[in-house]
Length: 384
Image (tube, rainbow, N blue to C red):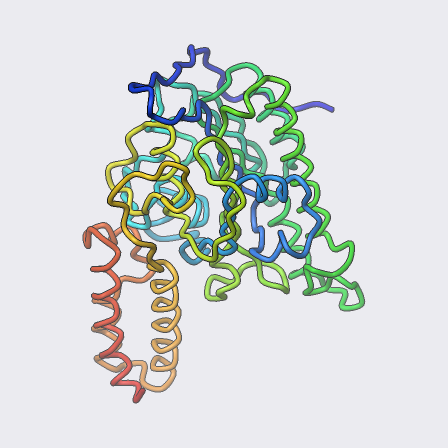
């Protein structure tokens, strides 16, 4: 099999983490963020994923970790900076308060320590900045599949032992779309990703086998006990396939943490994808991006830091607010398109189309409170 050329391969010596104080627990030397595109939070319970299940047993498993709605603007302010859907930079930034000049988790390591990125879609090129090693190729019209993504991920692992690596396997999300867009209603997987032998099941199982290959290579290189894993998705998946942005099934996905510093055998209900970066940075002993908004997942750690905020459900609350606002505004536009309340709503409400302006609020609480106040005026006008 032929593979596309390596886009960037720089040789920098990896730096080990030196710990002070014998009482301090050993830090992991390597961190891996594995994203299985479009993985439903139900997948670990409904599909045979033996390698993921091994990590679940060895670490902490959040059944549902919420991200921002999986919108994918192709025009407007967002499209000036990004080609990916909104959830992807949110994960790497650890915040929904994204800036046009946003720094991502890889910048926390670069250039002192090696970082690597392997993904089979060129839409992630804006997220590629700050990685030493990179493989990006493919698109919706000209797909490159997960085997090539994993090929380069393993090459990077063998050649450079990266301190941080992001691996994004795209095929599972594409298989979900195949169920959604199927025109043949006689096919068992037509609008049903859970049908036996559906493309979605098969793609998820293949992704799990690639996870197994990666784990086996870590064992061969004697790196398994030095590597912390974050296995998750960029967004969820509706039972019919795909991920409509206003469907709660698309807002949540599984999150598995395993490796040094992670408590084993825990199954918890809720986390948020903005929590990945601060937790990863804490474990790896690096300073997170300056505007990180998530919390360290202290309950998942063997030696949690003091003073970590209690778990919140900010992203679930924000998504529900955005969905409700969209529904109410749509209803009022049909009934009274020239209503002055709609004009003030369009001016004052900060929806997904204005996400690059959210940072002016500083913290999520203030954004949510502001939008809730604007929505209350709209609700009164709509007679709710």
